[in-house]
Image 1 (cartoon, rainbow, N blue to C red):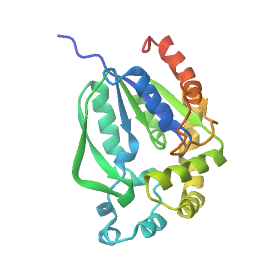
Image 2 (image 1 turned 120 degrees about the vertical axis):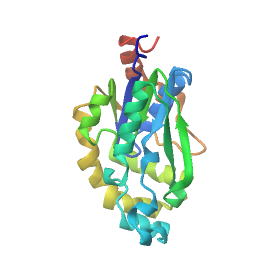
Image 3 (image 1 turned 90 degrees about the vertical axis):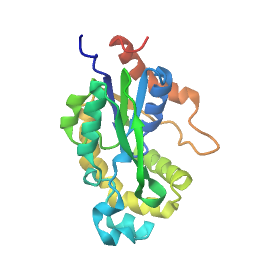
Image 4 (image 1 turned 60 degrees about the horizontal axis):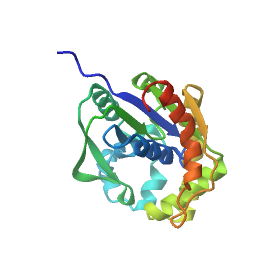
Length: 231
């Protein structure tokens, strides 16, 4: 009996607020759940216990002032790599579940991720270690101007993570901006496709419009058609 065909692996990366999650979700929806699996890198943040007893009792603002969550050292990238390799082989994995409002992993919670013919892995650090590139068949960098990325991050973190605009700005200046240059931007020069996402930042009342999403998706879809992955 011949071995199962390896999954077609897609990495979608870019800075915080660049539009990479919008692209990854749109691509997942276009390909369909029976064909495609979506893995979110953010679930691989370490829990508070990783930083010692003191971190368990820190307030949310104190934790964000103390630790640089835009440094890949604060994610279990070795675990992520093992899971990516397993999904590529066609094996299911159990992914940790990270809760942003508490900045901690949900105790005892895991998400079972089933293999699919196509697997998308999205996150800011997925290619911060360039050796990860060898795991993927297609790599995509989503680019956006810094001002739009900041506005999108403020709106997202206020709506989804219970944070104030001021705390988002302070974290951006101290951690996010330097991390973009150090850990994220280098991958831009190695990715197969660079797509621009310059649509107006969405909010809860006005999510990304379909035309903007289609423009973002188009160059990736064309490449997948050329590779025989998309119809």
